[in-house]
Length: 279
Image (cartoon, rainbow, N blue to C red):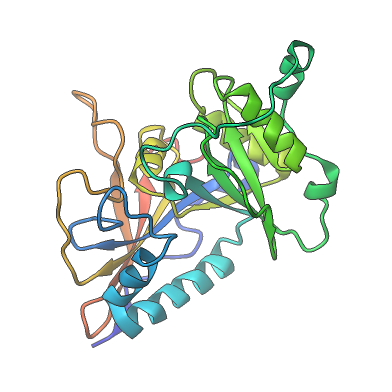
């Protein structure tokens, strides 16, 4: 019988916002029973026909459960940002955006400063950031804002300078954190400090979610599990990225609740247990 069981207290495991120097991070994804989050590495679920094929896997009950998840997130974790990796928007073999204007040497240092134009930050109706980690400068933006969302790019000092110049010309906000690659912990701290983001929901793929996990930045896991198995070596999973180091302990999870639909769709909610949960 469909239903939800084992609901923990809503504040269980979450410290007061005043104790944190970064946003509370919820990883919220839909997966097959074998943990796959797409059909194959090069099949982007943001594009057709793959998005429609993925939605069809769970049918009406999956739609219902995912709608309930979205409502719960808004009620329990009113978030000011979602998070994606560039791999959700461009193919795996996509390189940096080409054909961009060169940057004069005297302008280079200024481009590596955060770019948060007031016209975007204070835009009427903007309440959330569509945040994308794009340290290699791979996404050419055709849309900068949709409804309550505006684009926020997380870059590093290794991001092509021409790409940062392109973002500035387009009026797209970005934060620079890290040297050779985006420093996720520093970027999240900057989002809290500079933009007031206290909660972030990651709907990203396995590479970015795996990096968040390895960095100890995941606080909660909210999975919708579809009654299907996909398989395939290299097919992205919920958490990919670096392997668990020798001697390291896997992240311990505490079950918060389970929802079971008659057709086998599940919703599993976990809190990440660790001593430094308030960082």
